[in-house]
Amino acid sequence: MARQPLKSLTESMFYVLLALWRQERCGTEIAAYVRQLTEGRVALGPGTLYAILGKFQEEELIRETWSQGRMRVYRITENGRALFRREMENMRRCVGDGQREMREEEEV
Image (cartoon, rainbow, N blue to C red; front, side):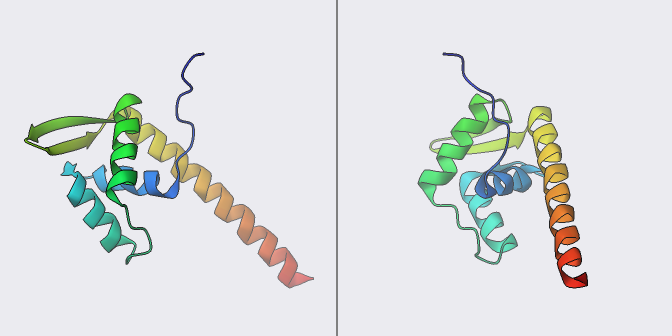
């Protein structure tokens, strides 16, 4: 059976790509960035984070740029940027749909 490409992102996946949007980071830097940005709402444990990083490398959404011992540094790829942009557009549509429905409910 052929492997299916990643079509959408979980919240944790979204924040991992966002963490890599402007700069390369290692796993602990990614986790700290996400925790700080979300004010602790999203906490990436090592198992979750490294599963995501492995999946993203497999899908060529990120690539390892440097390693020393157990430390690995990652960079988002153009494929990763494209998927992130699509996800952002989808989220905008979802929020717009929700806002329209809420306005219509309030007008009734």
